[in-house]
Image (tube, rainbow, N blue to C red; front, side, top):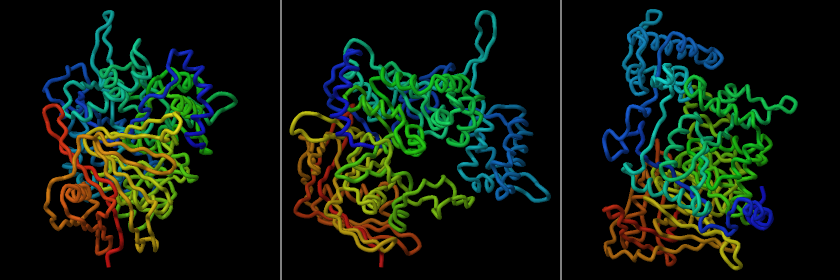
Amino acid sequence: MKSFGFYLSATLLACSVSAANTGRETSLPEYSMLLIGGGLQACSSVNTRYCSVADTFSAAAKSADLFALSSENIANIANAEFWGAERVIEQQRTLALLEFIRSRLDSELISERELARLWRSAETEMDGIWVSGRVNYNELTERELNFVRDQLQVMVTAEQVKNSRRTNTRLKEFADLAKTKGEFSVEIYRKIVELAQQVAGSQRKPRLLVVTASARDPFAEVDFYTNLFTEAGAEVSWLPVNAAYQSAQQAKSGNKSSCDALPQYLATEHRTYQRSRVYPDLMQQLQRFCQAGTAAAVEQIRKADAIFFNGDDQSLMLKAFRLEDGSASEELKQIERMLSAGQIIVAGTGAGAAAMAGGSFLGKRIPMISNGDSYSAMQFGAFDLPAPQPGCDKDQSCSNGLAEKHLTFSAKGGLGLFNWGTIDTHLSEQGRQGRLIRLLNDTQTRFGFGIDEATALLVGFTDAENAPQVKMSVLGAAGVFVVDTQALQSTGEGKATVIKQVSTHYLTRGDAIEIKDGVLRTRFAAWKFAPSNMQAPMLASGDLFERDNYKQLAHLLCLTQSRQAEGKAVKVGQGQHISLYKDHLSYARQGIYPLQGKEVQYCSYRNFRVDIQPVQ
């Protein structure tokens, strides 16, 4: 795909005509993208633990998914083609345990939590051998557990009387931002709508599209996000572009798309089943959307002021917006055109943010990260291969010689809307600093941007003369870990790889980044000052890439006068030794930010160096 700069110059004139037709200004908004590290929270009727007030929702709101262990549903689980000959024992044990639970439920509908509890605590005899539910549950892969749940899940309904007729209506999940505990999440959700309002102008509500293509079940979060953004002040619609839809559009018979095969495509591409039974109205909406075709989808995007991409699996997002040959779909091309002209805000969380990376920068393709943890990344390196399926280690189904946690990426990139480096998410919370550094090393990519949870990287473009190509700023709870490999030195390969002099920055609320002529510059927020803590303790940590240990160690190095911190990531005697250290180009700034009666401490740094080498 061509670089963003090409689209900026090549399409600005054409898009100005479109802007004139819609009453929009053609000037670029200050920020056109909002990339979130995942982990957002919102008070909803299904997740009331995030609500500040009890009993926020009425009985007319969905409170949980429900499951029915009927004979018919259990019979569907016996699908021999799904299990295969290698997993027939696990299949038979699962069926025996579910039949045991069914015999004691008396047609009662149960929640997912109750299903898991009953399953784990069950014991039954099969061919003279006692079968443990706990053992069976733990030996199934995530793919198998999802299959069982899908076959048992039913629509959550409420009886409604209309024109003297009693009907069952599907209950929907509702959200309440005003009663959400997570102030950072609320701030970010509202920022998306605020930016969309800048595009829409002051005469109407902003039109926002929700894309759920990253999800294994692309129907599960539709109600949540449409209600959430409606409450935030937007006019919201679901854009049902997903891998199943795109497969149906490409598998044409004559000039007609294969929309009748959507359930099969949902099974093969998303590995989700029985959605017509659980979400009949949304399945019908997907069918109508598919039958209307690509032109109608492009028109829906053209009318939007913002588009939000959900999180889960960036590989699924790629299948939704790129064709089998890797080229951009018409839907993606429309988003590219509008983003270039400042006519749409693009926001994504988790996988929806990671999928934005792509295109080229400084003459090199930008890869999209797709899987892996830091330990496996350092031991085995990065592989330009499809990501292994979750749980594939259990049933030995991992392909291409990979294990479940191996680092994989797409060298062709993702959607290509962010051209300046690889994007990683859930960065600090899942200790992903190591995998980001290793990916950049192995692919010779200049920049990487790792975004923490409940944190957003705002990205703005400008066509002004002598302005930077891109500017960014940080919003939210934590920070953005930026890697610059310009001075990186690397020797060896595989687990013997030694990586030295990696330049890293950690930017928090109010800090800014700009890139111009291949140079990345950072600017700390004006309310942050040099740390005054004169202590210089010895800093060390084991299991550096577990949980947020790396972030905590770097935070202490940021706040104190210590010049170096040491860490290890070792399993069964193998792993890496990691050094974080300051040199004459290193700077740190700390500050306290008041937010809704709380004081939040931040510490940002620039040019903390990182060396990684095998443990001897």
